[in-house]
Image (cartoon, rainbow, N blue to C red; front, side, top):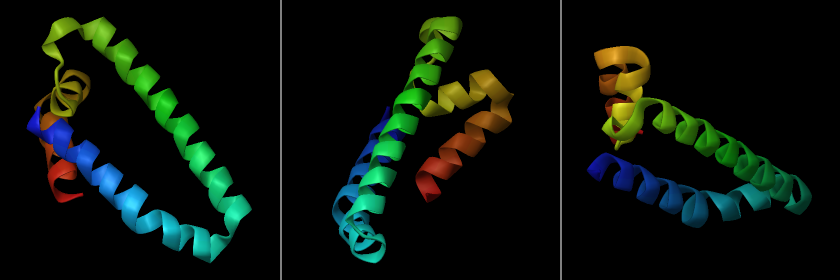
Amino acid sequence: MFLTTANIIKSFVGLGILASPYGFMEVGFLIATFMILLNGTLNCYTIHIQSKTKEHYGRRIKTYSDLGEACYGNLGKISVASVIIIG
């Protein structure tokens, strides 16, 4: 649960506070708005895929690391945990 919470907080701080104003300044209002909408659409799609995977594997998936383990074994679990902590 800690890794999932850390990933969400990191995403909010990184995109919402630090990167968005700079991105708007660099590429302009229309392109930046389009990219944010595209990002939201892709996020919705990945949430849909994650939900389907959770339905398939059941209650044993509680974190992103558990999802990585269910899909790719122990290497998947370690890889996902590492990316969340480092990234």
